[in-house]
Length: 221
Image 1 (spheres, rainbow, N blue to C red):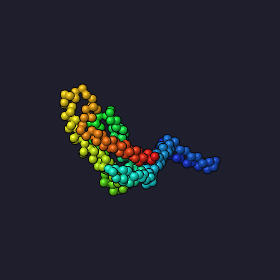
Image 2 (image 1 turned 60 degrees about the vertical axis):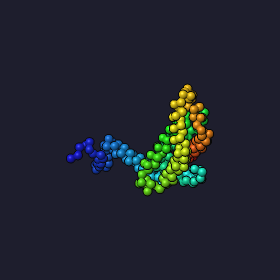
Image 3 (image 1 turned 90 degrees about the horizontal axis):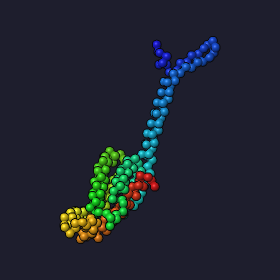
Image 4 (image 1 turned 120 degrees about the vertical axis):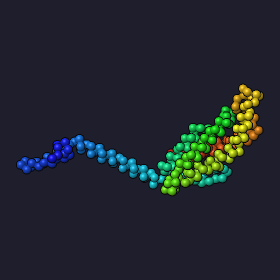
């Protein structure tokens, strides 16, 4: 026999008075209502997420990388927004998408920042799994954009100047004639200083533009 506490709804009809009595265990009823509302909210969130994955908004732009204009079509879905946001944050928080100031910035530190950006972007590309690429083909153009920025944007400058400059700079720091001199003034002695700075500014402009394009993917503006 069920105890009164375990009864959810008890319906009694008084035939003498022709009265229908309905007794409800409010605690259990409230629990059922709460569970129902939670399930409804969960279903709604899953539905919204699925809609966001299927109802995507294409973001098209022509991007000049390495001297050639390349058109990408980046699709705004959760995967692409997440990847784009990670790289965007790296760009705007280091000396990459921030304009270089020739008389204030230390080239050695800028190179270290660029190297870390290169490494982090490459690591993010590695984390895009085969399952995502095969089932979410809209990620392909974002992957191509990230790869082009590394290989056509950063890599050519770093390959041409970074190693030579770092070797030269470390040797200059040991010379007595440079003791007490600021890093900014020492670096100006580099034989190809003007060419290096001009190339660095080109990369800097590219990365600034790159960050703006990633922001479009993230915010759809």
